[in-house]
Length: 176
Length: 146
Image 1 (cartoon, chains in turn purple, blue):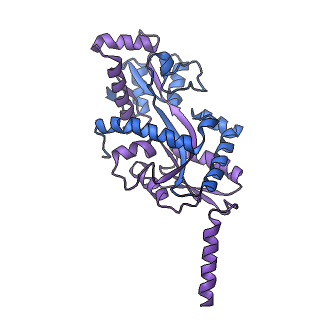
Image 2: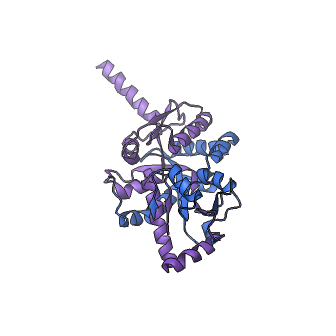
């Protein structure tokens, strides 16, 4: 009985410390929902290096990959909400998957945001022999060929971007 | 519209002039631009790239609102105490002003979010906007997991 009581007191003590001023008092796990070596992994490890100094605490990077990142994101959704499990995610894992997979969690409601890190835009690139010298000229060059409107070009371009995502980010696509 | 499976194949196709236009990451395109092998017309974001400040944004170049950026962020499980999130956010901010980390992120063609966009609230707002924008496009395109 006495042992049981001590156990209970200790357990309550532990629960109390989860939100206390001494956070973080033990190592934090950073979940990377994609495999080792990809851009999310590289950025995650770089950030972990800096945050380790800022928090004066060990940060363990754990890759939990699979199903477009949804397994790793799901792992964090169901982890104890005490700050000792953190997720690095991105446009693919925390926006696109919600429209592609049948998730058993809500990307907005079942996670709390910590903050944005960095972003990588794409470039609109043309062959060097392209007669157009800027984007306006390019649109003008495309338009007579197919008599496309700007709105249609934009809709098409969005599909191109999606295709780029589906074929992995390094894939490149033509629109004409 | 032709999907290419790898950067090598498509890079060859644009450099040799087999294709007219493509979207590519700055990491791959900048080398070709410097070698005069391609023309670069715009960056698909609200802000110009730190590593290539001469390239205009799509807003400036004549295709306003045409954004596609591949961004990263941190989350924790729902219900994490606010003061704990504040400490993690402070560590995130401290990391993003660290000159060494900034240099390494920039070298990866990453554009660091300005400090007024580094709050948890800014992430919540941005993620909602992105979901609102992209889910209809993804669903209309009929993309599935397999």
